[in-house]
Image (cartoon, rainbow, N blue to C red; front, side, top):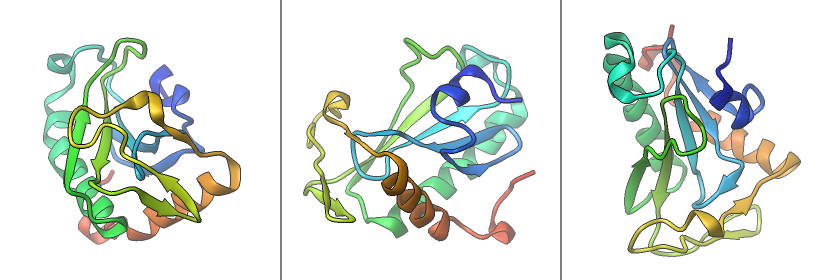
Length: 151
């Protein structure tokens, strides 16, 4: 059963990949092109409260995220933000960072905070068809099942 944070970020419609303890979702508000949310499925509201298994699996999930985002659009840096001010379940906002504005389907996605802190207030909202095409692109370059540690 999805937790409230998963639901808030559009699960299951925004799901890119689900693991035993984590799910990776597309952020509706693309602060940078390819912005994701990595949500822990454990009942935990603080990082030290997630299970040992979730901690161990996090290595595979982040490896898959970075391989996928690099294949999608090579980025210069990547930020994992654990904000949790509004949504209580353990989760990270994953933002690939780009020195130049990225374009997808003719739409520009600037990295408004580059080269400093990401500016989440300048996000491009992806809806309907654009969201579906972006999901398809990311799913298409995700590591194959043989390379994953999914349950």
